[in-house]
Image: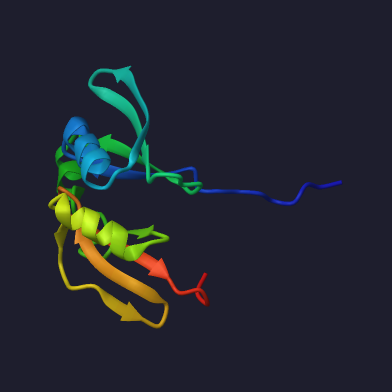
Amino acid sequence: MNKPVEQTIGSIALVVKNYDDAIAFYTQKLQFELIEDTDLGNGKRWVLISPPNSSGANLLLAQASNAEQEFAVGNQAGGRVFLFLHTNDFWRDYHLMQANGVEFTEEPRVEEYGTVVVFKDLYGTKWDLLQLTETSV
């Protein structure tokens, strides 16, 4: 008997300039959790971070190691929003991020699907902070 296909996205690589600066930003300004930081030798590390209480994919912080990768830092989606941070309390997280100095590119807005605002990480990667409406979940 064949098993049904079961797959998940385990991690999403995010190219960064510096491991430690990225860890500090995500854990201090966004309150993410450092899941793993393992030295792989030759300047490489396996660094996994995740939003608090998340059951979704982790972010794998990958420090740029050549010119092509450095060019991608902050622009991995060609200027579009790259990642979507879902929350169960938009205003709590928005105000906390504001207090922590996170840069927003717009004012929060209410859309048919939920409350949303675009913010940038320390390298300029665009994110949506999003609380979906009950009908969108």
